[in-house]
Length: 212
Image (cartoon, rainbow, N blue to C red):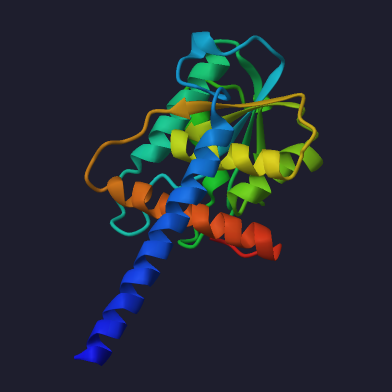
């Protein structure tokens, strides 16, 4: 009985510490993004922006259903472009994802279907992870004024990465695509809590190379 109580206490301590760590990581990311994200096109300050469209696949990886996260990001990017808020769209994603899909080409095709000219679309197929997308937008493509385009939770993490590495953007903000509310999409939001902990672990260990 005594051994059982000890094991229970250890498990409770581990669970409590893990929960506290997740909350702390989340709060740091959320706090950093305050005042840097926008939900409406008209609320975005005027500027010579490039839109950084963060990649995902058009179909969900597990159930192979329509990916509403993908569709809403495309809508958001096209709206920004046609409103004149951005002059170019840099699509950053995996050119050969886990299921063999070229995220950047799929997003490009969807933007073309929404009337975005091909000449104003730039592809970066080496944005394997969010950290790569943000760093390459600055170091490889020379972006100075950047609007991140993804769902709110993803923009918050990307903004934290930009701040952490001290990238000398003149202006970097996020434009929040609509977040799906289906039961299936809740898995993504739960995964994000773990992604934020993993992000801090990778930053502390200087591990920026593996795909997630």
